[in-house]
Length: 292
Image 1 (cartoon, one colour):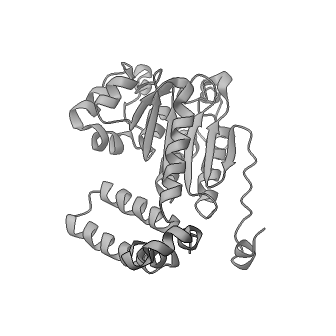
Image 2: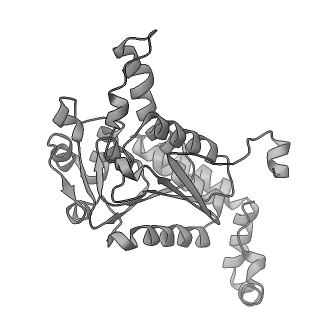
Image 3: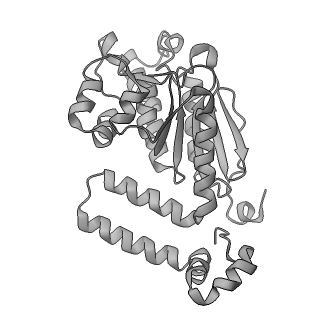
């Protein structure tokens, strides 16, 4: 445990899970759904662990960017049907179970992805069905493998096409009419079509999907100050809420003043000063960002 954690009584940032795996690659953490035999369908166990990770990692300042992926052939094939078949607890009816446990646990994943201060880059291939679609939408950036296909699978079983924030995110990402086509029709939509609609940042081969997403994450880490990066996500997320233009300007002004007065911001200003050009070349480490 670091002095930082001891002094402020923060939890130890250990991520020992069964249904998700966390790989630390310096400041980039790769979070993988690892129930490939079930196409990474959302079980109660997987959702609970993913929520726990997202809540913890917000305070883990070793983590700068998260890459989210699924092991095996698919990202996430919706809700785990084995768990869907479970009987409700004896002291709780089916409606109460669905509302208090299943539905909240599902949607909390999206809430916690938004609250997570680090950017989340999806490295997505194979199927993203139902809840997998919604988790894909909640990523800040998306690198799609060529095999990626998503659809609102809920419609096929008599549920609504909107769940877990899909109706919030998708119209903002691809526009209302295209979002309506996705959420009102359970047909599958492929990677290239979604890229042309503005859903994806990149489309690459399945073999390259994870490595390209990690490369993007590492590029972001190498060229940004940690605090400034977190504030940028905060402002972008606030703009999605439909806040007014002037409120966004106020938040941007506040964030710029905060970031520019951190040690990293002050050093960045010195780095840009033409008078320090030679010193920057001779002593690059002196001007590196240190999360201060």
